[in-house]
Amino acid sequence: MSSQYLTLYKMIVLYMLRRSEGRLSKAQIYDFILEKEYTNFLTLQEVFSELADSDLITEKSEGNRTYLKMTDAGAETLEFFGNRVNPSIKDEIDEFFKENGMKMRDETAIGAYYKKTGENEYTVYLSATEGGSSLIDISIPVWTEEAAMAVCENWKKKNSSVYRFLLTELM
Image (cartoon, rainbow, N blue to C red; front, side):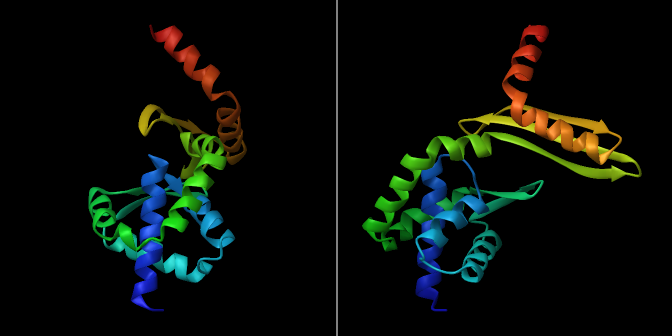
């Protein structure tokens, strides 16, 4: 693959991250780029890898999702090379965010995943963010995987009422 095309795909990813004003999951970026048929899955994996290796993005895995965030170096790179992205592609990205913005924000604002931390022990990690700032981060030990899954599902459904309860009780 030509380095010219890889650079273009990298700039598209960086532009999407800047446009999101926070973080995006790899799946959200895959959805857009593959739907528009700009490139294929394997090339996009190479793009993510090169962006991370060059410290232009950071990756954070939470459960079965990997979230990306642009670094300061990524923002500088986008300033220098962002003009390589065709204005019509930028318009398509902007339209994608207009149509899917709230759904995408909801998907990245509430985090819930768990890890096995010992024999018969799991730790559940729950978070909520708004505007790129953390509102709450909680880790809870549980004793079964079923309990960990239930806590994650309940957090996704009841996070705002749990957050309100905690604030009310603590203030």
